[in-house]
Image (cartoon, rainbow, N blue to C red; front, top):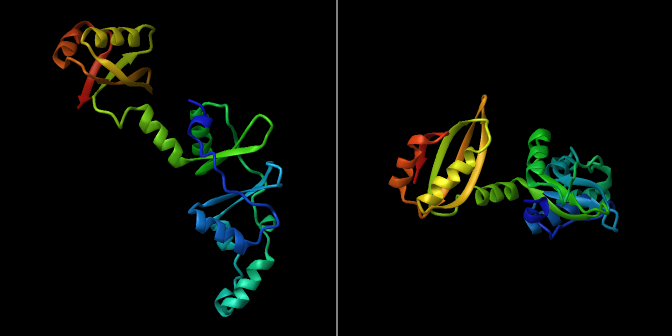
Length: 212
């Protein structure tokens, strides 16, 4: 699955000459926390967050009346406070690349660029979570089996054959390194559970547990 399959394609953005006041209004009206800044031609030049905008408010705000505060925020433009070194991702890369970047950089979203470098979307932590829920089959009925296996070829093929023999249909499958071994997690629907358990007596992988 690629970033383009999970990203939000309707991106709310603005230009560098937008006031802090206006940028805050855009965030609140659209119920978003990040606002990409473009040059008007689809090229991203910065990004601001709700936290950035709040930090831009005058330190003497407590002593200003509402009109003075409004006027002060109208004078401050987002180009003065925006993050210019924006971390982005291309729309044609695997979604796990975006997840890795967000985890390593400790950020909650990535603007998405196309081959020409234009802003075409944004992918957030929520988009990643929803995608992984779908990939793991969490929204479908079935039995999830977790196996421990050494790192050798043919184990997944062997398990798939046993599932087929027990009239099961694989909904989702994933692997996870576990020391020198691997965890293999398979979610299956329509399976003859008892027949499948019986077939595992001569299986290369060890069944650790299952969950209905």
